[in-house]
Image 1: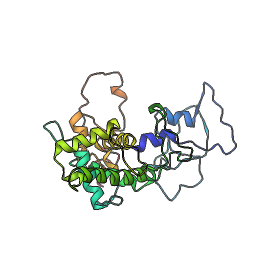
Image 2: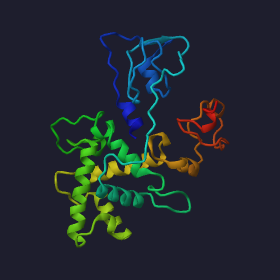
Image 3: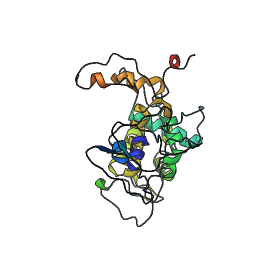
Image 4: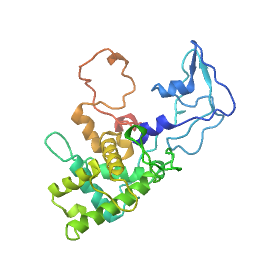
Length: 277
C-alpha cells in the first residue's frame, strides 16, 4: 500500500557526508529507487532490534559488485492475528460493504471481503500509514488539484474515521436512519458514485473525493498485495491473474514476453516446505 508509495517517499539522511556517483559506482539511494533490494550490509555495526520494514541506513557508495549479505535487509513484518485493531464494529460493517461493492465476487475471482481486504486496510490504518508517517500534514491547506496528490490536514486514519462517520450521517438522513451496510446494493452504489464524483458533500471538513480515492486505492492494494500484509488471502488475486509472486530469480524470463511463468505463487514469507528442517 502503501508499501511502494512509502518506499518512494522515504528520504535517507545524509548525515553531512557526500556520496559520489561515477560510471563505476552504484549510489545506494539510486540503487534502491531503481528497484533492487540491498540490505544495510556493512553500513551499520549492529543490526537494529526493531524490524518494521521502514528502517534505513547511513548513506554509502558501493564500488564494483553489488554487496549482499543474508539477513541484512529489513524485511516487512508479517501481520499476526485475525482481530481488527482500528475499525469499530460499525466502521468495520461500512468497510466490508463498501469494498465488496468496489470488488464484488464473481466467476473470475473473490470479492474484497473474501480476499481479506478490510483486514488489510484495518492493519494499515493501525500502523505508520494510518498515522501519516510519510505524508506532509502541515498547513496551509488550500484545495489542491489532482496532480498534487494527497492534500489534507487529516492523516489517513483520521480521514477514514471522519469520512465513515459523515457518510453514515448522510446515509441515515436519506434512508430512514439506515446504515450504509443495510442499504440495497444499488443504493450503496449510488452513494459510492456520489463520493467518487464529489456530488455528495460530507460534513466535518471531510472531502468526499479524497476519501473515495484513498478507499479505492487501498482496496486495490489489499486485493493484490503480498499476503504478508494481511490481504490477498491465499494469494487468490495472484492466482486469478497468473502472477507467480516473490520468487527469488526471474532473470531467465526477462526477455520472454507473453509467456506464462509456470511457477506456483509464493509470498514474501515463502512456502511451508522452505522452512522445514
